[in-house]
Length: 225
Ligand SMILES: Nc1nc2c(ncn2[C@@H]2O[C@H](COP(=O)(O)OP(=O)(O)OP(=O)(O)O)[C@@H](O)[C@H]2O)c(=O)[nH]1
Ligand SMILES: [Mg+2]
Image (cartoon, rainbow, N blue to C red; front, side, top):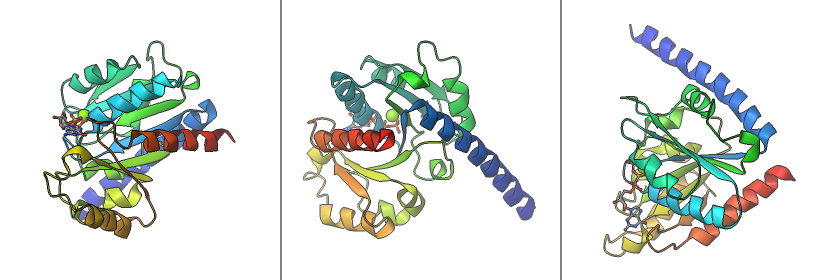
């Protein structure tokens, strides 16, 4: 029985990886930089994306976002206030997005052509475990950790941090009140993913956003050079 479950799971992941590979090829051909944002529920993914979308648009970039949640379109409505095209994906009980959901929601997205975008952001379902195993065809996986979650999370949930290309520490405006141990958090992230780019941000004050936006522009420039 256990063997069959493992085989079934491997089969699902293999199918996902194949589709993700073909999505990645399409994204590259269209010249759009795709990022997948992953964290616990409530880390501040939507708040961080609200600012990112608004700031990038103000700089003249063409951006769009897909956002995953089990239920509600709350996050899509928040993100759409930036003026960017946004599409909500409701997974109805599934704890992560997969490549098939991405493909399905890119199809027939009125007014959105991949080739007409500079950046596509995907906010994953709030979960530190399941999304780590599902490639969505993204170029950059971003792991977020807030100052309220505990500095040990990268050590306890290594799969996400290990597979991430960048890490974002959120809610730095309340770090002091939470007695957040910055050095320890940085050390723990680096232990799991040595040398990873880490951004320390606050979506309330805008701290750290300049560095983050510069990173995004640098990554895009890399793609087109
Ligand atoms: N102080 C402070 N609060 C923040 C910050 N970013 C987000 N929050 C608050 O944290 C809560 C959760 O933020 P969201 O942006 O909804 O978090 P999320 O990761 O998108 O949550 P899910 O989509 O449910 O996984 C909200 O009450 C936000 O106002 C921040 O930088 N500083
Ligand atoms: Mg959210």
